[in-house]
Image (cartoon, rainbow, N blue to C red):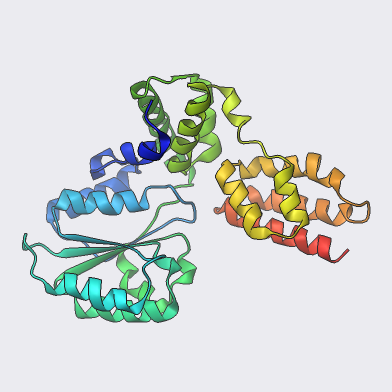
Length: 315
């Protein structure tokens, strides 16, 4: 079996064309129309949940259109010099294809307001030769003048409405099984369905969890959920008020946020002093209730952790 470091399923099975991406029919039809028209708007692909296909769609769209593409991870490359060198140089050199050039700005919400103000100016200056596709988790982190440049091309990738779930979950189920068959990994269909239900709409996490578990057992059965269970290491982070390590632990474990509340009630509460327990229980109950309605469950649980730490500090 290939080493994990050299062979990552999420990259190996990343769709390269819009046709192969799992999207609602109406959204896929929009992207297909861009391809057939050989023209696109400035697009902002947003989703509070990672792993829903924003970056994959941006790259596949450029690939299908046959345009010159410049990819920038904006959360890492966010200095003004990036605009003045990479983007300006890319936009001013004549396109080989004669088609509009496309700059893909991944995780654009990780940039500063100054960067965003400068980017807005670049988008206006090069609008005759260049289009911009931005991806983000939190549109609220973008300044209004920049958002207005994407006003007609903002597409939400959360797909949490019932109609979208009913359409997409069976397709995701089929895709996961297809990957396992290619990799010759045995599996239980009911386990695959539970993975889809628990981690929807984060397809990247689903695939990552399956690969990680397959290296342990070469079989995907209900034991996969045992590997996602947390231990006292997480509780120690919280008791030491280390929010960053706690969040990192939860993400790396691929924990189910909906199950964390009951797990904390059963296993974390007994570790607390008697006077600390009532406040923390009330906090858990409050955020467990909110969990059923919020779109971003990670954000909701992070807020719960902050309040729990505050409860403990004030005791």
